Image (tube, rainbow, N blue to C red; front, top):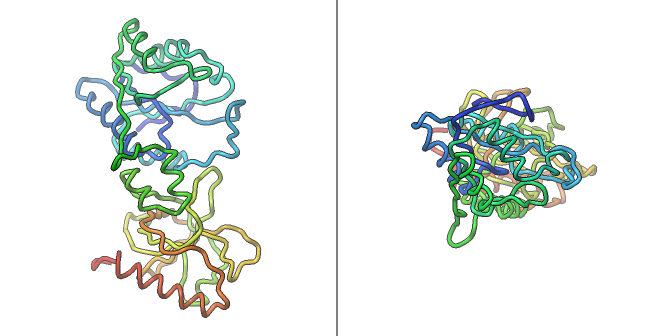
Length: 309
């Protein structure tokens, strides 16, 4: 997959373009992407056109928390077989762009699309004045077909990034996975921590929280861990401030990987969240913490550990 992250300097032709934010790449997004991929046999390139949020007058980007980081989003889209990912800068200049100019100057001139695929409620351009009706009218003029995709639903609930973010914030990672169509995950480099887990016989692989990334509610989670060599293990992850042993209140992400004994400092791992086991608790002693963690680990092993691990 080729990644284009600038406003100019690119020019494609004969494309099928999916337009949207694509935060989380959920089941609704997959419908758009499946549609553009279905046209590749016609000699067109598949393009996902999304936005790279820069400092602008509309959104306070310092407060934005995305389901996936830019790198995680790239990874998911690449795995789906998309030819091009365009991360168009969303800055003040773009915020002021008239929707007609966006279609003519960006989509038509730079992508020469045969197909534009959008959600049924897609809006774009200055003050969100552009919509599907405008795209249809301009498609007739410039020679592209607009395909509008209805919202995906799960048991009557509309699937949206907003809903998924709410579930993740609450720690409902299993429900979020249903809406996403795959487990919510984080990725990062294993770093040295305080190594307190080793003192109670439960060593952990530690990841640093990343700015702009949405993390689940504090607590203990059942997880699957994929290592850099693509091997996979069951484990348990604690997200929180470790109130029993940490008075500073800094949030940590610590994962105990079951039946795993190798040092992996500096390696990148993926942690896929399966279920919230319990909330964060301040225990009276390290021994009480150890007893509860033993119970947590036993629960996860009985439910998720496979015979091959």
